[in-house]
Amino acid sequence: MKGRRSDVEGLEARAAELERRVQRLEGEASRRIQVEEALRERTHELGERVKELNCLYAISNLVDREGIHLDDVLRGTVKLIPPAWQYPEITCARILLGGRAYETGNFRETPWSQSCDIVVNGERAGAVSVYYLEETPAGSEGPFLREERSLINAIAEQIGLIVERKRAEEALRESEELHRITLSSISDAVFITDDAGRFTYICPNVDVIFGYDFSEVRKLGSIGRLLGDGLFDRNALEARGEIQNIERDISDKHGGNHSLLVNVKRVSIRGGTVLYTCRDITERKAAEEALQRSEKQLSALSKKIISTQEEERARLSHELHDEIGQQLTALRLEIGLLQREYGSVLSAERLRALTAMVEKATAELRRVCRGLRPTVLDDLGVAQALESLVREFEAHGAFEMETATMQVDESGVNPETAISVYRVLQEALTNVTRHSGASRVRVSFRQENSTLVLEVLDNGKGFADPERVGEKGFGILGMKERAALCGGTVEIESGPGRGTRVVMRAPAAGREVESPL
Image 1 (cartoon, one colour):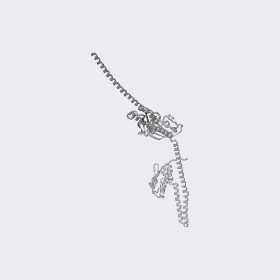
Image 2: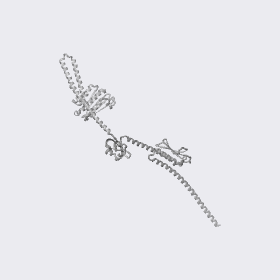
Image 3: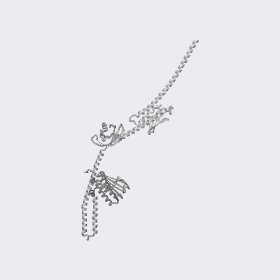
Image 4: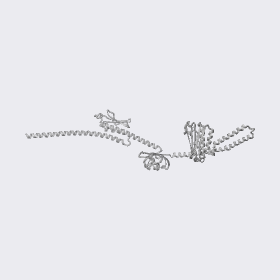
């Protein structure tokens, strides 16, 4: 009996142990089920995140395709959106941008949607929208997950950046194309080099000046092979940043000679540091040289004309003085004889009238002779000739004259310079008499080293535009031309109510002018 009880107790103990073991196993199975469920959820979540990352990665790859247009990027992007959502088989998407819509093939609007604005350069430019075609279990945002909100926001932000980038790239391409077309259509040649002179950029129209095509210039390797060495001072370029209007003569591929005007500028572009702009001025220089030759010939011709004119005036003066002057003198002597021999018969009044007429004709003849050729220049020199001219105008003018004439070295004054100074003063005083209405005129004549200076100042009415006085009449043009022929200048200052100041400066020794022949 005792032994049987002991067996029953052993069986009960074993049954209790087995029950405890079953409970432990059930607990472990439950925990295992929970872990497996959590693992399945985590795996699903990770799968969703992978889909999202794949979407963003695929959009990035799409943008990086060379030469792809923005429209193609947006069409590709909208197709990548549905597979990244929780229920891709019932998902559709649309991208609105700039008035255009990019949609998936199954797109239609439904009540189940989420959207995000596309912002470009700080302004709303469109939107990304995702729709479910059927009702689905609720998430954190309607039927959508919290992560899907983050994803659509990321897609919208990425599209905004893509649009900015593509527009910048297109603007750059347009700018480069415009730059290329502009450079191709102008005659200037443009180069960029590094500090060693090696080309980093060659303009497409390089053949216009140099005769070499792009590839031939590239093979030359450096700017020195085109323009020669020592074009500019490197230290000067560093200090100033730019050196302009460097003239350089070069030979082109075919041996033709060109004169270039080169500008160099310190830059940092296309891997280069020095920008060269070359302009062909060969034709311009030839035209300038031809113009200079013409001007020299014209100046020489003008001098010859004026010289001939002065010679003719001198000849006429001498002829008038010698021929008519002698006849007037003889006539006066004859009147004197008549008066002595027939004074009792002839009217004394008529004889005096005849004598006065002869004296007046003689004085007029002398005045005309002085106007044709101021012999006082030859007899007394330029200073005394100018003083005499001033007194003559003072005697016949309606204004007060003041002179300040200094002694000059008459031996060093060229005769042509002397007559030019005389004629300029003569014309200036004539203008005062005719036009100024002045009451006072001051004339000064002095020598400053080897330069003669004549100044005429009046207190007349003046005129408004001294810069255009050369257009007013031949007299002023004549003064300037007279001065130019002996290497001098005439400056005129005036203003309404401020009178007029005429200043002539000329080298005392004059200058040589080439023969026009």
